[in-house]
Image (cartoon, rainbow, N blue to C red; front, side):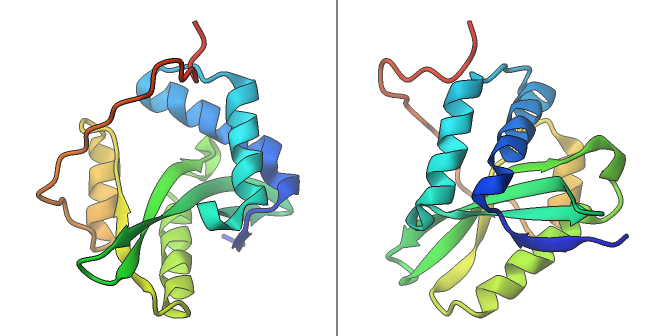
Amino acid sequence: MDLLLRKGELRDADTIARFNAQMAFETEGKELIPEVIGAGVRRLLESPSLGFYIVAEHEGRVVACLLITNEWSDWRNGLFWWIQSVYVEQPFRRQGVYRRMYEHVRELSKADAGVCGFRLYMEKDNAVAHATYTSLGMAPTDYLLYEELKPGVKFLKD
């Protein structure tokens, strides 16, 4: 399949926001607030220190995306790139699109000596995702993920 892989740009913001909303609904049954996810995507695209998106274009149309954010590891004196917000449009799934995007991220990391590895999180019951990430050489960690949202943080529709 002919794909162009590149960093996301402001012109991709609406598509990326739509993909994020679809991913949240498909994987967790959650409906995101369009204005919040839209503003969040635009803010990241305008603030490279927060991270970057990789998009896959097929015949001039964005069909997949993923987000890279940074985590500093003082133990390793390097950055982990967190892979987040992975979405591939339905007709393009199970055709190696994500694999190509992941390999692209690996290549980008080779040009940045400060990157020490990659991490991601997924729904614990998503067997397809587990198999995909394992096939790429990733392995489960010994860590569990916890979170606490500040009071008033609203990102889901009522």
